[in-house]
Image (cartoon, rainbow, N blue to C red):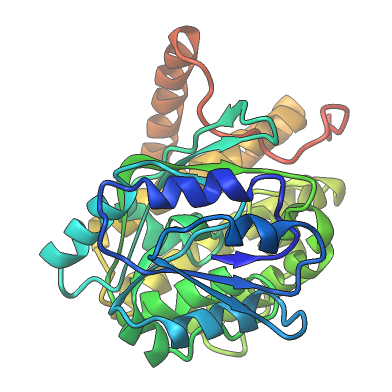
Length: 348
């Protein structure tokens, strides 16, 4: 657990680890030069499992995490943030999974996303078999949920990026080892005003992710592949830049490039490669993108888009899925976060 000026939520985060049903672990905490009462809070705990280290100066998240990996004496390392809450059986479930699946290098879990007061915001429902395909475009894995093998992380040189460091590590691990996400919610993930990737360093993280996604795509297509930034944003489910171009043909080209990329992903050998899962994940992703673009198009543009990116068979399946989804929404609340769109923007 790296700690930097985390006094507001630190005690609850520490207690959630110390109260785990799995008792045999070392609790490495590295204070990265906090100037608030974080250090005093940590020192107020008398649990012998706690190992506290202090950086002489603020090193930043990646260097601090790498230091923790080096200091860890156990072969399995669980990540935790100083403002989140791990459920009591989190560590036991994850250790059990890795023990039963020795080839797997990292296991994560689902989360409930909460605000600073702990109020429920959303729960993303992501199937583990779709992670490999989607990790090309989006970091679906919540960093403080992961438990990984120390040797595997060291084999890919640990955290190597100053921003979006978790996305980079997960990508590198998934190139060499199987990864898995448990279907249970095992952590409350807190969104706060101090969140690095969403508030304090939002621009830096966004830029790093753009570079990483382009690199990920070129891993499959080759280094000469040129991908417009608007396409990358679209593949991340930020549709506003593509919509602002007001060109339906550009949307068609974006989706066709996604189809071509899916073919390349299917051909690339990988320990997480599952043809059926990749195909299903690609179908869902394409449908989600089209479904998000359609409300902002005139009906003639919508028809053009649909006929340009779907075969007749796939179009029938898309329309059938839309009807099923409409019926589900009548009885169930929305489970996924809304796309990044402004309601007043329309090509109509």
